[in-house]
Image 1 (cartoon, chains in turn orange, red):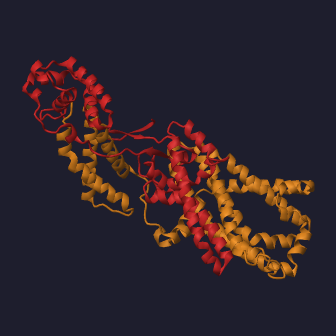
Image 2 (cartoon, helix red, strand yellow):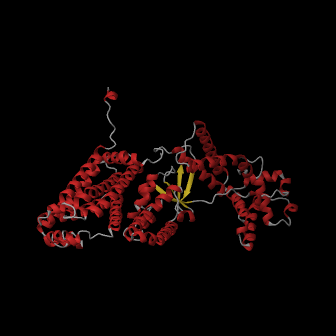
Image 3 (cartoon, rainbow over the protein chains, first blue to last red):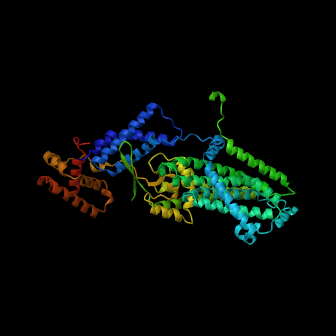
Length: 337
Length: 253
């Protein structure tokens, strides 16, 4: 049986055009809201076009027309059957102070894993440094860390080094922001290797951190170390840990241990959370980059160590409070009763 | 070419043509060229800022390059419904692997996991995964639940070219028309229609040969009176047949 294409097109063209116009409107305006009658009409047009496609497939094959109808049905299908939360207009403050910390708390186990790996690496790096100081160049492959802690502190506290970043603070800050963000993205993205890559990256960062800490503590420069690392490290290190948390969330969705959902469903469920985490990390790292370039690199006598240590400690406390408490819905005793 | 078939709850099936890794690589090359161009244009203006502060100019350059290279894919795909400039030129589009609406979080993740797809260099890992994956997905697509499809050129068939409304001598024989409709295979009818629709794309010699071969197939199904087909070129013979098969008020829809 052969379809009468001319008659078919003449009869149905107006419905296809109407559906196409509705789709263009919905796809262009992210916040578009349809009334009940518009939704009914849209559903009718979708049903009619889907039916046309089915008839065309059954009786005849005109490839161009079929592709055209397939395209319309595919687009309308996506609009009608999407059950995930409708995208609303982005509110930056609400996102940062509510969505981001809530997402962090929802996946606290992944954060604990991330922290444990970094601490494990730090312990390994610290012990290696303590018992095998010869391994310093391997554990800390940075030229400026090759001198002894005492030499470095003496060098940093010289008056002529007071403003050694003069004229390049902004460049240095932008370099730190981009480099740390790149590392964070990679830490999260490596979750796609079932978390193995994320774990390796966190552990290796921990090794370097632990080695540096032990080197300075053994060298009797604990105060300098705290004054140097705390102001930016109190934000930078938790940021990397949150990126690692994202990596483990992704890995868990891939492995699916303890979940009865399909892998596709698991991945779909965590994508908004991963997006929240990585954008939150980016915001924190911008702040950390500015602090590191404009504050952390100045030591006594320019900035007393107690000021830097106090600043870093308060910052860490505020960050902890922010992640633990921000966005928690206030409990109303009236509502309870 | 690989296709992604999606069956709706209403029982209708539609297919999406998946883009090949090579086409995707070309689109990526265009996108990288675009990013380089934008950064170069930015570099032209930096000396102006450098007059105020060379440090600030450097910082703006570093941040801009990083922001542009990361956000280019995310912003373009979000604002242009799954397309970057390279994808637009090559008619590729990122879509949800289940045919649903593409979400912002999917776009973000497929672009961020690009960092892993790039490893150890030149998209080696992502490229290999693409070739091995039945849906031609790189790791980013896999995690984000997306596929890249080849868009079809959408236009309705030009029936006027095939059916100009001229007199059709075959219509004088309704019993032969009925027999032809009954016996013609769908594939042969479609072949005739497509041959006429693509008439101008054929080389003249090949066109004559193709029309002759198809007309010969129809002649084996039904024999129209000698006086109707004598001196009738094969192409006109096919036009008459297609007119009967595809443009009849009594045809079954």
